[in-house]
Amino acid sequence: MKKILATVWLFLLANTAYGEIDDTEALLAVLNSIDSMQGQFSQQQYDESNALLATSAGQFRLLRPGYFAWEIESPDSQLIIADPQYIWQYDRDLETVTRRPVDDSQQMSPLQVLGGNETLLRGSFDVEQTATDTFSLSPKGINPGFQSLLVTFSGNAFAALEIEDNLNQRIVIEFAQVDSESKLLVEDFSFIPPQEADLFYYDQ
Image 1 (cartoon, rainbow, N blue to C red):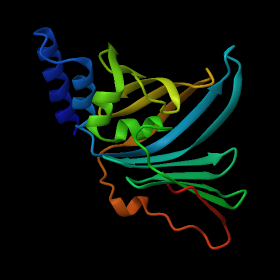
Image 2: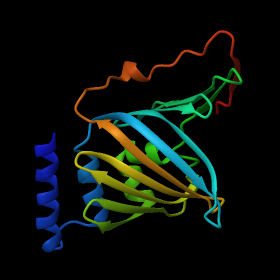
Image 3: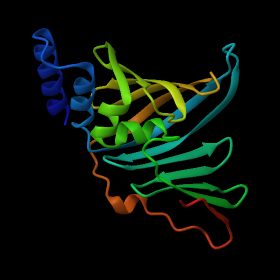
Image 4: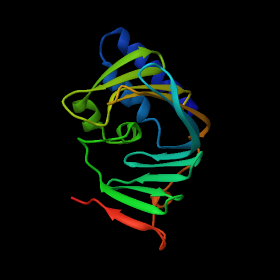
């Protein structure tokens, strides 16, 4: 996979020199070299004045296109799982489960955007390549739940995400021990609500 990504970067650099590829296509070329990914994350949330509001840490899984799992292990315990049809959120401490339908135009998480379909990314976001391994995404004409997204790659994996949300708060996510070589399956993203949990379904 590392050899594939190196080939992708060489292709991008060569074609950019001749003006044959734009920043959106450059980002898609990198994303399309990734099938699946899993690892650990740490997250910091800052307010408008850059004061630290909260921190969290846990594990994540991503299978392109359309599947991701985000499991917060501290300071509380929550699991968010998305497939092409639903987004599930399980709060283990409160013993509640919510289910919402996936909507490509509203309240999408950054991982849904990066792990989703090419048509959405091409048509709904302005993309700027700010460095060799860094891309900035700004939504146009939609409300995905954030104002801007900065994604940085390291080798063939995510290194960091920086998100400005609709409340002008900044979220910084750093990834560690990322494995993009081991294969994930659709079955790795299945979710069955525990019997003791209270269920809240917001299906359209």
